[in-house]
Length: 294
Image (cartoon, rainbow, N blue to C red; front, side, top):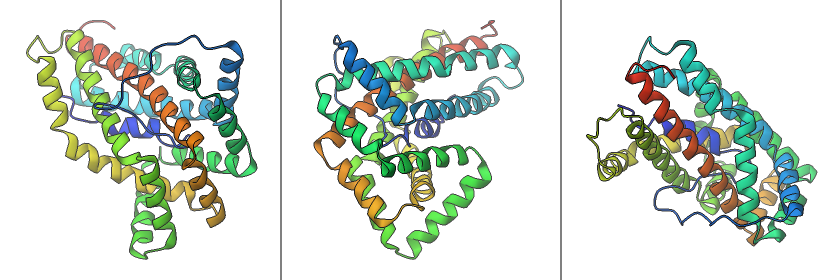
């Protein structure tokens, strides 16, 4: 049975695009759909380019392909083949992921156009672009297990030295609530996966929604440990090249009203996309478990 592996995949999707995290179980209800003026939609797409979201989505696709292999090995070893690979590729179609994220970002920021302009100004600046490029490079680098192991060791060394950057990173994490929001996001993704399995008939009606919730919440400690295990090496790797002044500028923006609004909007946009991905993976995996063609 799937046991929380979606958390790390979810983290790798959701960290690294400027204040980026995830809302999940227990989070505030998602914003009702509203009509977004074309001009604001265009602004949101421009901001998406500034935030390097197309690059983040490409990394999501690569991570998704790897995660699909993990699911195959766990749930139906030796029986995936080209059909499963094609299904995973469809679920992680970068064009669909980017479209959904951009549309939801525009929806979330429709009531906060000033956050759009403020985010564009900060992240479009040389400092903002440097930060985002480093985040994206770190995401790509951590696709390699050896690089991830080295980053984990570097993070541990930094903490042992009690370097000033450690406190700066802790403040950044606390301001943006990255641990809690990503724990909730990981649990939410796992719940969506269970629902997909149920909808695909793999659970034979043996788990009610309450059972699924209970099972997912039982994973909270492991999800939290996985969140912290990946988050600190990622932040250490991404932000090590930043000067103290650049890190302080990022912190200062994250503490503004516009920074908080952008953070919430990105949480919601990526959450909606990843919940869809997780549920679709559950449905596809259910068909494989039952020996059906995808």
